[in-house]
Image (cartoon, rainbow over all chains, first blue to last red; front, side, top):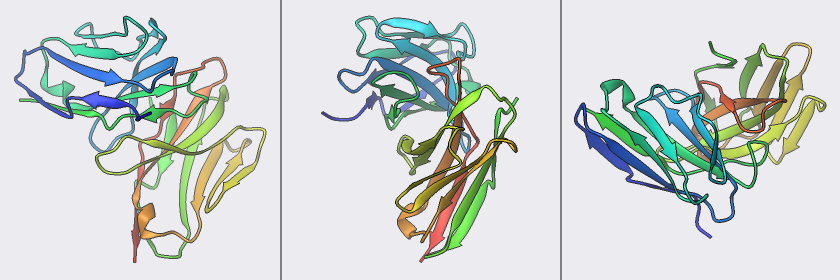
Length: 114
Length: 113
């Protein structure tokens, strides 16, 4: 069906607010990735899910960042007490299995923290 | 620590010309090297990928050349078109990982008509 869907497309948060970013992967895709992309830079790995299991969260910048995929489909990236340095585009990608298969990226959520 | 170094940062090519983007890596554990293309406001999309047991891979106008001894690989876009104007990212994946793709910093390509 459709590709990876992310919402909201844009989010403006005041410093200290909590935000939740949603990702709807392609149906049937086992693997789900979150990446952070700063302006003019390449995507940086945040975390990886295989079905509902979070196998790697080593890229999450701090304990203010939390991701979940409770039923193995939709995923949410939550950022608590947002800081200005959290401003970036957050990209979600899914694949049939792992990163040796094509990663299908959503169009991202642009987060601006003021 | 930048694990995959990409150059140039930006590139301007005339229509019909050849665009060449280079990447270098240090970690010999990398064994899968994809290239992704990203248009403004969109997520990256896989263009072409190569493994180190192959020195060259071609798909249409896009070719990856791989030099294992030099730990370098490059993307060549033949007969570049204005529609190729986008940002290109090389990436690398370790053999002992199935998911942690490391991206380069990107090359912004502009193809002039």
